[in-house]
Image (cartoon, rainbow, N blue to C red; front, side, top):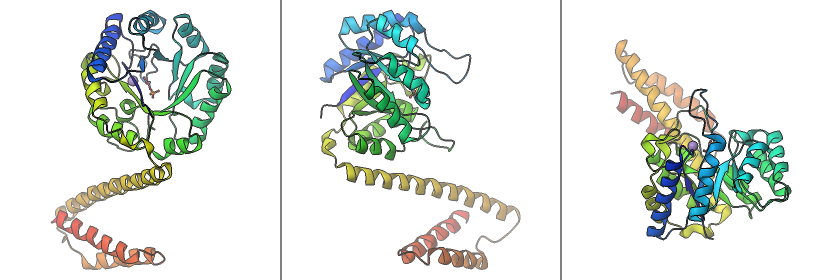
Length: 339
Ligand code: PEP
Ligand code: MN
């Protein structure tokens, strides 16, 4: 399977920034012998805060058209409504993506699908903001039914309220379920929006390759630190080429069933680590209370009660011995920590 690489800035900010970033990417790609299949840039940006940079709108389209003509790379732009589709078509842009905020509303999606019916548009459908596989799949089907040139999915993770190292939770089982039910559909990963920080992008990009994703959409900017949106998650063109050329792409024959089970396991392991972290934080707070109130760290009676409770919970399961051992270990490490 040849992977699909999409790269470009979060937003088109100026002719100079769009052209400079595209030129940087094309040169880096050539040096590293990597194909660049699509250049991306947002013209209309959906932002949470009202006074943020919200994109240059239609004014950005001629710059993108120039990039497309100069470098002969299709350019993709995010659209939220049929009017924006029309503006893209007017400027020769025939690849569009549907953002996570638009993907939430099937009525908007249907209007967008009707606006590209029987056309040569390629449509990339990002996962919706909520972790609802049926909604994502339904959106994709609306475009497939509209008989466009090509449809692809993009996994960008799901916001959650919990403290997380990533900007969005990957919930890998969702795109993997999608792959299982629509095996012909190319599914790309967008580690930029998933991670929110370039620091985590390389391991997440590799994980996506291990899971058999069809490619990556990555945000790149000629000078990320001065980007008008998403500065922390944009790579320089050189960093992009470095990342892509170091990916291990051997696992493209991944067994989907195995991949699916592994991703579920990984998800459980992540939750266990998260819970253990929360437990340790509570243990520290308890240690504080005990110190202030001059209470002994080890209280045998208290532990006996806890142990009894655990025993009751684990009576019916096969791994009782393991769980008892694990809980004892946990208790001992909490005591050591408090001491
Ligand atoms: C983007 O790709 O620029 C974007 C806004 O993405 P998302 O819809 O995934 O937040
Ligand atoms: Mn962005």
